[in-house]
Length: 183
Image 1 (cartoon, one colour):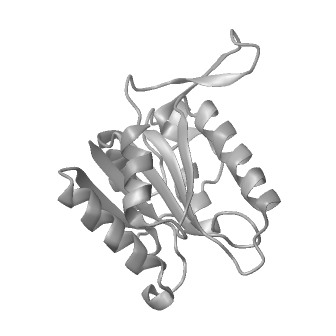
Image 2: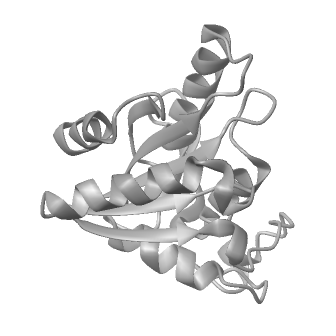
Image 3: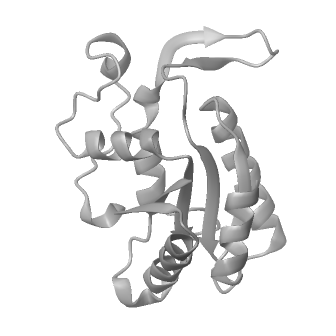
């Protein structure tokens, strides 16, 4: 299995979150899985402007000159993409959200309503399954986790993939690896 770890930690690396992801990558590698880690805070990924040129003018490619192409290649190469972030005000960081928006070119502009819901057709035959890994805030409640899970579940559905797990850094990295490799 090829895992993409999208590190959406906007804080300096001494926050403990990055060390957890490094340990997770190590355990995945020890178990024979391929790992690609993208430290999103060090990438030039500009905000999606909503221009839809990635659909209309340059199909499958964002017109913004940033590192979106590196993100897209890594995402499409993965079997599982782990969207990792500390919670900020009860949800994933703005950095992670901005990065996920840069995945819009993986969809086509055409709408499928055959399931009773509207969603875009996929541009590619294979996209990775998704897992979300978060680090709680001091006041994180079960309700925060449930809301986050529902939002990411909907996002995965709209991206024509599935959310296989919502996981916490309170879990041992071996448990996280088990959850994403067995789903």
